[in-house]
Image (cartoon, rainbow, N blue to C red; front, side, top):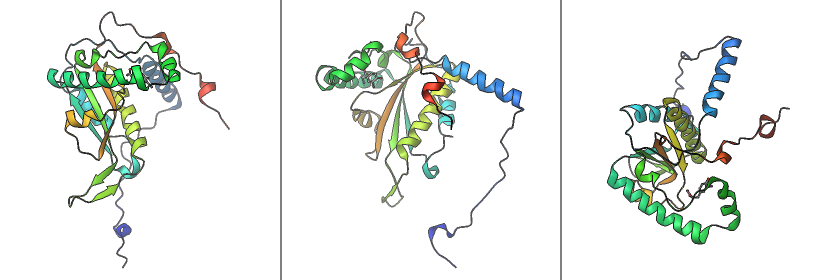
Length: 230
Ligand code: IYR
């Protein structure tokens, strides 16, 4: 009898939910998904209309199905909707952005951002109906307070974030992957523990009717540029 942690009997179950499509259906679905996701643009001009009930919850559930290192699911999503908390986030983010744009950012970085037209003003942080602060748990905490390692946590949270953005887009909502730098203030506003690090502040809602987006953001690399086949 071996008493190491992995001596527990491996539990298996049938892969009952897999769906195989005929080749033509696969081709149609692959094309349809690409066409739909290719319409997604990062939006910085949000309407303040509220998001219908249950949408964010389901999109978060979709994000929570993402694969993760050892299935440790090292993420936490804080949904910020109250005007007071959105105001706190905006004020703290704009303070960081002033530091960034006026002092910390090297010229090369500012040059790379120029085609997006971003600046220190972040009115969307108050105007959008919801902000989702995405936290990566650098390590887990056992019931006795001791720490355990989370494997591949940045990659895992990145994958879950991708699922979330795709789910929100699929539901008909616009998003902005906003990255105030540094984002430590989000732990305070969202009351999150110190094993968690905010990675992205996802701004979610409807675009304003007259919303404009930078042309630069719609220019995507070609298949030849992003892939090689060997
Ligand atoms: N955090 C700043 C700067 C910024 C950085 C990158 I990289 C972007 O893709 C966009 C903006 C801001 O939000 O303005």
